[in-house]
Structure formats: C-alpha cells, structure tokens
Length: 217
Image (cartoon, rainbow, N blue to C red; front, side, top):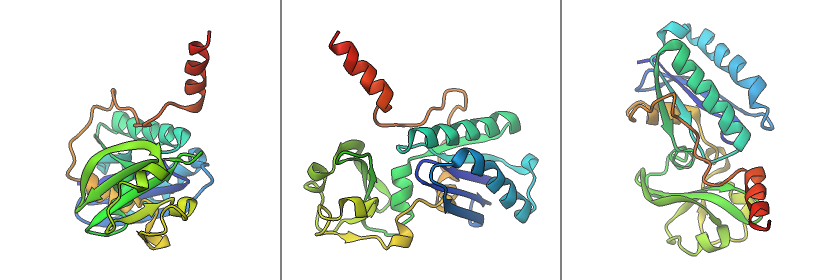
C-alpha cells in the first residue's frame, strides 16, 4: 500500500507518505493559510525524495475538518482530484481526532481548535476512541465538562486562562501531523469521492450572515 496524506485544515500545512505501517516521508510548516500554492510543490518534493510515482499510489487520506473553511476546501479538492485522476481510494479522518492522536498520549485527550469569539471546535478522545460528539461550542462551557485527568491540545494558548487547571500537550505535539494521519487512514473505510465534503461543524460566516438577514426580512 502506498498512501499520501494531506492536512490543510489548520494554519499548518502537513503532507506525508506511508506504506500503511510506517511513515516514509513527512513535511509540515506554517504557511499563513497559503496552502493553495504550497501543497502540490510540497507533495511533489516528497514523492521525488521517496522515488514514488503517482501511478504507484493506492490511497489518499485527507483531514476532513473541522477547521479553516478555505483550507478544508483546498484539501478536499486536492484529495478528490487525486482519487479521480489516479483511480485510488479516498479516506477521510477528523482533524480533531488527528490532533489528539498527534500528541502520542494514550489517555484522555481534548482537542481544541479556536473558532474565534470565545468559541471553538472540540472533541474528546480516550485511548483513541471518541467520547461523545465533536462540536462547535463556547470554550468556557466546554471546559467545565472535562475531567481532571484530561490532556488538552490544539489552540490551548488562546484559552490559557480557562485551561489553567489541565495538563497541556507539549508545544511540538499540539499540531496535527500528516504522518499520523496516514497511519490512521490506513485502516479506515473508503468514502465515495464524488460525494465527499469536508465537515465544517458550522456555517461559513457569509452563510450565517445571509441566514440571519433572511430571519429579519
């Protein structure tokens, strides 16, 4: 199996190659959400370094959100294009699950992604299994539901005061890694490329404003 994994759901762009059992190549860097121009050159470089050809790929794994609306669209479009043109399998993995798994922690982990104005996208996992549903919530309310043994990861500095009682993942392990994404996606069910859409967990700001405007007409 030859897997390419793509995560464009956060400020960090991350790409990896895997044989399904171990990471073959991986690269990540912060691009200020300039993923559209950076993604393919980064992928092509990794493929060249690993001496892989597009025809050898068997699966593409993409982080499907929640996260940046634009970033998610870029990742989804790229993954679907690869699946279509190369005739390979498409697999999607939650960005929040990926964030939790990237800590390497085997206990309970809460992944938090800043969604501005005191809100965030959140998910809780224990031994790799999701506890409850991933949600878009007010972080102040969410924190009250966490048990004392929870490790928090993601945009924890943004909510530092609220998260003060909890252990935090080391800074180097707070961002999602495409290498981990590739390993998670190696055993996940395939999704239909034509129907695949990212999971936003909330409306885009423009859509929300339009709906609110309709309510007041």
